[in-house]
Image (cartoon, rainbow, N blue to C red; front, side, top):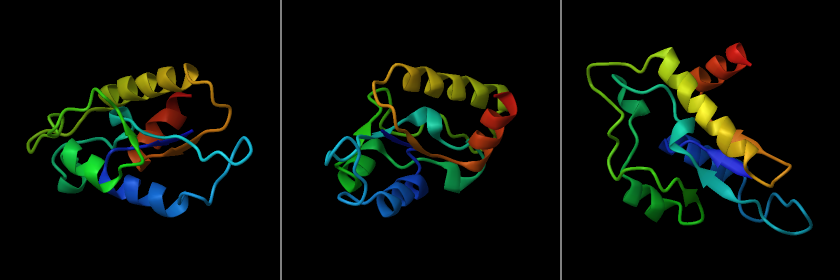
Length: 123
């Protein structure tokens, strides 16, 4: 299982690092690539942390399974307020809950610095 943030830079990294045909698990089966909104960087006030529309992301990365709860537009991003650590921690817990419910035994997570810093600090 490959999990990725919906921010373009992570989807690009996922595509470059894990090109179809380059990574095989369980014989010759390519891994599932799932995009989770909860894996994104702390958001707000910084345009690079604003997500593109879901329809554009799906068009650009048709092989990725996008989180069905993702809204078309980035409703979480704000021009005037940055996301707080407790909010990031709630998203991290949501991500970990998702992972625990999956059958895969191998996992790659493509995410961001603040997300990882908060997760490693907590766990």
